[in-house]
Length: 124
Image (cartoon, rainbow, N blue to C red; front, side, top):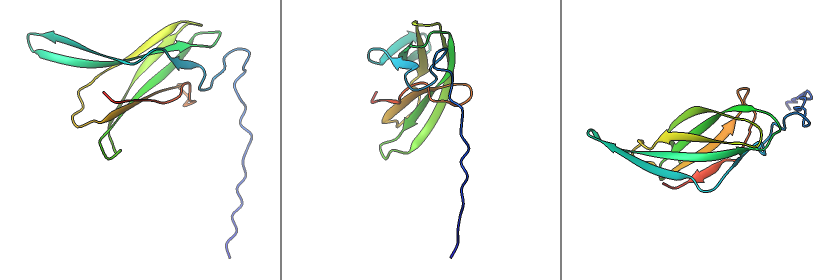
């Protein structure tokens, strides 16, 4: 018989009076939008998601775009940096150039990997 002992150390939480680093920090605002722009070389579609900063200070994060196929497998992911002052909004934009993608999951994390938003799944 094998016995495993796992020791969990206590992780200090961010100071909620300064910046509440959790999934309530960036909240999606409105519906995601898909826009098109055309030039002499053709047209491109972009996906844009707007987030509101609910903290009482400027927060920087990384917005991830995760593209899935019809079987739920990740076929592509990319990221972009976002930053917003207290109570202001910021937008994360990514080109919709991934073939055979059924949906896109978008979420924001801090530079240290702490979740700053819930995941939003969009079916473009």
